[in-house]
Image (cartoon, rainbow, N blue to C red):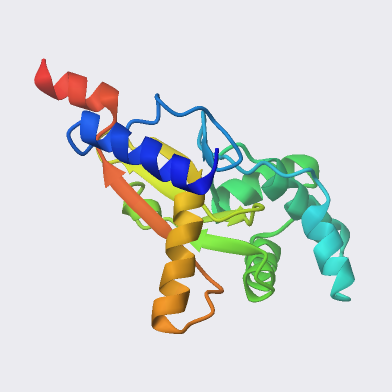
Length: 188
C-alpha cells in the first residue's frame, strides 16, 4: 500500500471509529504490522553474535547462551528471567555475567532497555533491535503488551528529524490504554 493510501486508510479508520484507530480494516503489510503476542520482531538466532563478532568483541560460552535466550524470547524479559532461562542451558551463568552482557549490548546499541510504562513494577526489560522501530502498546488494566510498527511512525521520525535538525539514533515510544477485554469488563 502506498504511503498516501496508507495515510488515507488510517484517517478513514480513525474517523469511522470516533478517534480510536482500528487495525482491523488494514491487513498486515510491510507498511503496517501488529504483534499477535508480545513481540513482533523475532530474529533468527545468531544476529547478535554476528554483530559482536564483527566488532571484535570476545564471545564466551556464557555470553553465547545469553544471546540465544534473548533472541529466542517470545516476550520481553527482565534480567532475572534471562538468568533463569540461561541457567537451564548452562548452570554456570551468573547474575554478574547477565548484567555485564546486558550493559555491553546496550553500549553497542544492539538492545533496548524498557520499563513498559512500569506496568510490572520497577522491572526493566530487554529486547534486541528488529529491522524497524516499533511502538509498545500496553493495556493499563491487564498489563498485556503488544508491539505495533507502521510506515506512519517512520514518517513521523523523518519529520521530527527534518524539523528539529536531529539525526535520530534512538526511538522509544510506549502507548497505554485499555484493551477490548478490559473495556468490556468495565462496562459489564
